[in-house]
Length: 311
Image (tube, rainbow, N blue to C red; front, side, top):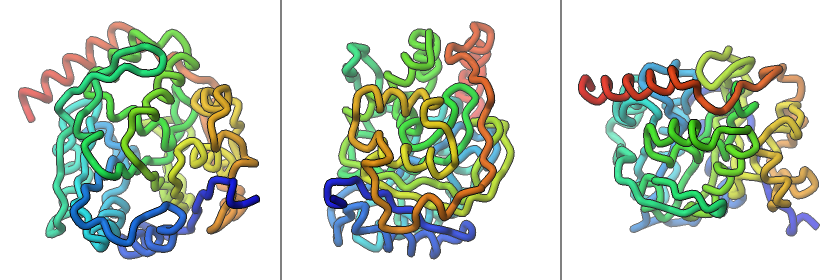
């Protein structure tokens, strides 16, 4: 029965125009379980920001963020936008990618993920999480759909890795990167500590062939939303015509039999995935190792230090 299935809302969006994005969010509001009013409540938008030097294509688009922010402001929310890029600061990244400009004049607070709070994951690992990412009434995950050289593809679950603070992400690559499956299990464990959330994926202009930085642009024209990150990723893998079994993150959710990890678990109140068939989305043939080589790791530490003293 449909009421036992997880709804994934898929919509076509012809471009990055904030009023179009806001309208899509309003259309999917019931599916996402959005309240009519968020008066007095804090809604945190968590985009995918890598760094100020990353190409615009690698990050959640400024106008999509502005469109989603508008939809929540209309419902009375106190809206914040924040992230913890691997290099540099969130403010600098948002300035470079036009997000600060897109949000100008809106009652939106731009914040840094900077305050660590320790959490023990189900695997027993203690991880420093950005306290700011947990300090909200609703976390709105805004992933960018991209190919990924290490994890096959970046969707909504992978974007949650951004709540790990700064260079601690690189440290986890070094200490927990012995296999793709081990690293995927760690990321999936992060879902257990999240506040209430929804995800709205930027699939309008996506990155394929390589990623998460150096890939090519592909127009997909899709905005996708769900209250279950596992279900959203399952749906998007199918929409893109990809082999679910090749995604380490999907394998981790399927191995745990998590709700939403099977296509049969899903229902589509908007467009069906077949509406986006034949996109031509390409992923890497072979995945790179998860663990950074020591030289790359040291370069990353030096780069972060230089960005800190020369903002």
